[in-house]
Amino acid sequence: MGSRRSARFGGYRYPCRPAPYDGLVLFALGIIAGYIVGTFPTAQLVARLVGADDPTTQGSGNPGASNMYRTAGKRAGVLVGVIDALKGAVPVGVALLVAGRSEAHAVWVAAVAGHVWPVTRRLRGGKGVATAGGGGLLIAPLIGIACGLLFFAVVKWGRVAALGSLSIAIAFPIVSAIAGRPGWEVAVGAGVAAILVVRHQSNIRRLLARDEATV
Image (cartoon, rainbow, N blue to C red; front, side, top):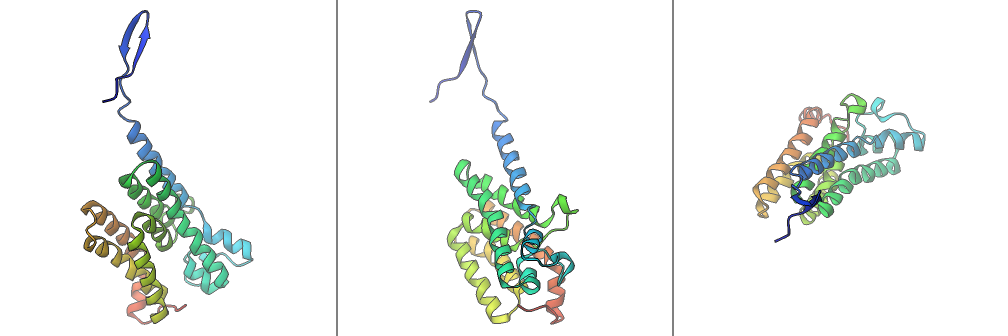
């Protein structure tokens, strides 16, 4: 058992009460930091770097890797995908190192929310797949790798990025449950999946109409 800290004033020793809200403050700061990292405008900055037009005005209008791949080329698309994945992986990794799994899951959701609903761009962001994938890879490495392989297999088979994205969004919480992950972790994974599915509503409509763009 640790000893209680105390302070001496005027010859008397008074116990120092532990700060009960320190953990809560750090938790909140982690969420805020994750959200801020998520708002980083990767696609727009890469477009400027390679001399391409703003991706929000080209193709599907989505500032993500798939649209950049189609409108600015393979290198630009891959670069956006990698950086967007780091937007999820870095804050989650830091949270795992300095805090714990519950904090890491909260930061994961915050980073995805920052990418999808950035206040810096009037809540008009990307679809969150790469950011969710980057964070999910550190949250559950084996499941993340399996979902990554599933994504590439589906895209190679169907030539439709949205189909691969929806597949892994649905697969992650299901595989987590089958693998015996705690219920709250499965619930968070399902919440992230729900965000991705909601952001893919227009893609789902185009898929049903057989009008979705290919890669």
